[in-house]
Amino acid sequence: MQKHFGRGLAVVVLALALLPGCAGSNGDSGPHASSAVEVSPSGAEVISTASLREAAAEGATPVYWAGAQAGTKLELSRPSKDRTYVRYLTSDAKAGDHRASFLTVSTYAQPKAVAALRRQGKRPGGAISLAPGNATVYYDRTDPRSVYLAYPGVPVEIEVYDPSFKRALRLVNSGQIVALG
Image (tube, rainbow, N blue to C red; front, side):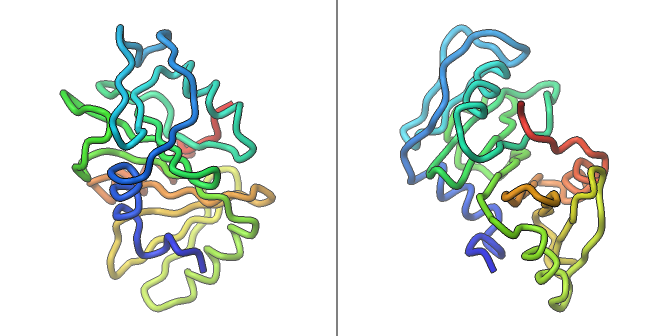
């Protein structure tokens, strides 16, 4: 089982708060563009959609997101080569904001992601289903915080967190969680 199971949002907040290092370039085009790039001390960076696509293309591991979301700006954080976080900041939030108030799509390198989620689903409270693209979906019914998904043949596990668990599940089940590319 991966270390991040059960940690969900705590990992995202800790990574954004404490771990430096963020890959990607600073662009200024796309719907999330701003006149100045915003970088936090944690290495989290507010970037444009175009820059997010460029950063994803540079990595060996696919990066997943929920597409453009109205009223948000994209934040990218890469605390390690195996972990990428895309957060959707709202209102006046700055890069590295410590609040757990934002939609977050995390991508973790995991060679056997589908099998790992299926194992999790066999535990008490585990729920397993399928989503578009033949994705295996897992969440814990007894403590639903994040929704995890994995695609056959893709060596990553994706975690979708939203302050509203129902919204996270709806995003996954709608097929909106896709690889940048």
